[in-house]
Length: 207
Length: 404
Ligand SMILES: Nc1ncnc2c1ncn2[C@@H]1O[C@H](COP(=O)(O)OP(=O)(O)O)[C@@H](O)[C@H]1O
Ligand SMILES: [Mg+2]
Image (cartoon, rainbow over all chains, first blue to last red; front, side, top):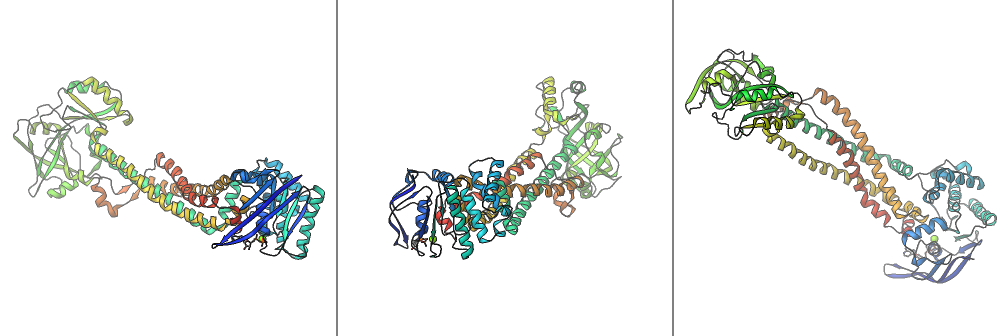
C-alpha cells in the first residue's frame, strides 16, 4: 500500500520577486517498507520535496496524499497531529531539544501523545537498548557527538511507530564512517521492522 | 515534562534570568514596602486621632457635630448614662464640654479648641495624660489647664504660667477665665498640639454658663469592631434628640484618605507592573528568537501551537512566581523587624508630625496586599510573555528550521 502519494507537485519560491522553481511537477509514491534515497546536488530541491512529503510545507500546485488522505484539506492542528502520529523526522542538525537528555528527547513525542510516564520511559529505554545507545540515556545533546545525536534523533523518529521516517541529509554533518554507521542503523531498522525511510543526500558516497 | 523543560530553559541563560528575576524581586519588595509603609502611616494617623480625641463613639444632641455651638448640649445626661451603663460593650465613657475660643498669654494669643474634661475619667478615653512631657495632668483642682507643646511655644509659657481662656457663653456673652498651666503634652500630631487645650469640666461649665450641661459623651468600647452594632443599639434607645456617632462618622476625612490611598496604590501597581512587563517582554523575546530553530523542530515533530504557546508562557510564569516568592520572602524579612521596631523618620519628622503620623512609622502589611502582590506580579509576568509567545507560534515550522 502507498504511504505517500504526490501528484504533479510544484513548489515555487519567490526570491525578491524572482520565482524559483524548486519542484516542477513531481509525481511519486512511497510504499511501505521502502528505503528510498532522494539524491541530488545542493539546491536541487531535496529539502523542499521532503518538507512537502512531511507536511511541513504546502506545495504551490499539486496534491499530497498521506495514507490516502488529502493533506491540503487539513487544519494546522490536524497536520501537527498527523506529524506526531504518522511521521518521524530526522533533520540535518539541531534535532534534539537541548535541555532534555537523550532519553527525555525520545520520550518527548510520547509525552505529546499522552502516553503515561512509566510506559514511555520503558519504551524509550528499550529502543535505546535496541539501537545500542543506552549509555547515552542521561546525556544532554551538547554532551554527545554529532553521530550520537543523530542516532538519538533516529530513535526519537522511530519511537511512535510512524508510517514513514523522513530524514533530510541526516549524515551531512557527520564524517564518512559515522555517516555510514547511521545509514547502517537505518537500514537495519528498515529490514528488521519494515520501517519506511525516505532520506536525502548530496553525497555520492552515500548513494 | 513541560514544566521540566520550562524550568531548564529558564536556566539556560542564567545571567538573563537572574536579571529578570531580580527585577521581579525588587518590584515585589518595593510593593511590599510601599504598601506597608503607606498603610502603616494612615493607620497611625487614624489611631492617633482616635486616641488623642475622637474615641470609639460620641453622643451629642442631634446636630452638634455639624454645628458645634455651645448651646447645643446633651438633653438628658441621666438618660445617656443609663443607656451606656446598661450596655455591656461599653468599657469607658467620659463627659466633655467642647468649644472654640481664644487663649492668650502675656505675649501671644491663639485660637484653640477648649475642651472641658473629667480629669478622673478622661485618661481612660484618650492618651493625653500619657502624652504629658512636662508637669502633670489635670488633678481636678480648679483653674488648671493642660496645653500642647506647640501651643506652649507659641504662647511662650511654661509650667506654672498663667493663660487666659475666652469663648462665647450660652447667653452669647464672652466668658473668660484665668488658668494655670500644669502640664504640657506632645502627641505625634503637631497640628493637634497646636490647637487643643484641656481644662476641667467644672471650670468649662462655669466659664461658659452651662450649669451642669455637657456637649458630648466620649465612649470607649471593649471591642472597637462592634461599634456599628453598639451605635445603632444606643441610638435606638436614645431616640431622635440625640446623635450617636462612630469614629467612622467622626473622621470621614481619614477614611476617605484610606480609600484614596487604595486607589492610588492601583497606579503604583500598574507602574511597577509595566516595568516588569517590559523586562519580561525583552527577555522572553530574546530567548524566543534564540530558539526559533528549536521551536521549528518541536512543531515539526508534532507539537501543537497551543502547547508551544503554553510552554513559553509557562517559562514566564515560573520566573514570575519564583521572583514573587523570593521577593515575598525578602520583603517579609525586611518588613517583620521594621514592623516590630518601626522606622525612625525623624529626619522628616517635621512634616510627618504635621500629618499626625509621628516620627516612627510602623509598617503594616495587610493580607490584602500580600494576596494582591502574589496574584498581580505573576499575572504581569505572563502578560509580558504573551507577545513573544504569539510571535513564536505564528512561525511556520519550515521557515523556523531554516532560521539558522
Ligand atoms: N524559503 C525559500 N525562499 C526562496 N528560495 C528558496 C527557499 N527555500 C529553498 N529555496 C530555493 O529552492 C531551491 C531548492 O532548495 P532546497 O530544497 O533547499 O534544495 P536542497 O535541499 O536540495 O539543497 C534552491 O534554489 C533554493 O535556493
Ligand atoms: Mg537541503
